[in-house]
Image 1: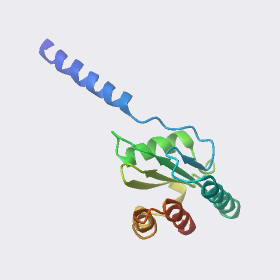
Image 2: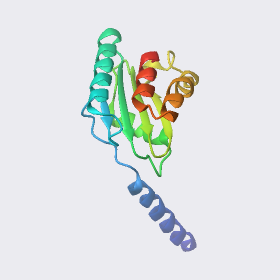
Image 3: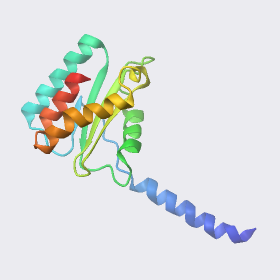
Length: 153
């Protein structure tokens, strides 16, 4: 019985190390959080205004997060942690969306609250990334890709 205790201790140590290595979720201080400096002040301000107008017109909230990396986590797991921390969307409606760009990882994720899963299912989010975001990002136009995506969300 005591033979498995060292293996358990090693496993717990490894899992604890992985948990500590996760990227921190930044504080939600604005509708656009750019930790990479990708967007200039004018682009950030225009995007903030677009997101405010969308929220005023439809009620749903959209936030944009640009980070260098989500490593060692994949972007989906990181996105869930961000969504849990930020709680975007109206209470009891859960109609928030977070557009996450992991720039150095070359990954994008659209994290959709339960209240919008019918309107923006996974297939629609993937199509938005493929058709609107990816072509602009490949051309180096990050602001354009994000603006286009927000426009169709």
